[in-house]
Structures are given as structure tokens and as C-alpha cells.
Length: 91
Image 1 (cartoon, rainbow, N blue to C red):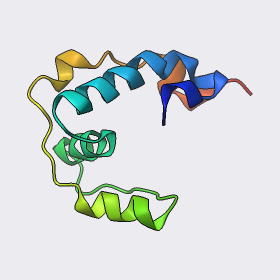
Image 2: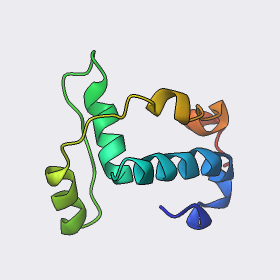
Image 3: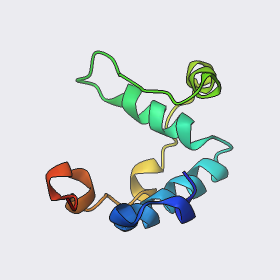
């Protein structure tokens, strides 16, 4: 999602989204590549579940085979708890 399209309730996530976009651009990856690479890197997970909005998005998921850049953890600021915990989202 383009940072300008982030819904009002998730405005706190805009800086991290921009960091993710910049990291992807620096490594010639897509944001989808980075997100999937992160999910695959979780050692305790035996698989991942994804949802898709279109056939094109599903094809992008299947085509992704990237690894996380070494500097990813120091590049992306952790999300605030107000974003991570849906119980804290405005009603």
C-alpha cells in the first residue's frame, strides 16, 4: 500500500511502511518479497498463510523467492503496540 493511502487508524505505521519501501528499493525487491522472506525466516513456523485480493497478487506470491537482506533488522523500526495489537485499534 502506498503510504498516502494508509487509513487514518493506522497512521502510526506510515514511517515503517516507508522504511520497508525504501529497503525494498535499495535491494531491487518488492515489499511483497520482503514480507514473504520475513515470514519464511521465522524458525518456529512450519508454514505461512496468506490471503490474496487478485490473481495477479497470487502470481506475485508464487514468483517470490527472495531472502531477507542482512541489514533489514537495523533498517525497519518496530511497529508501535497500538498497531500490533488489534485490541488497541479504535472502535
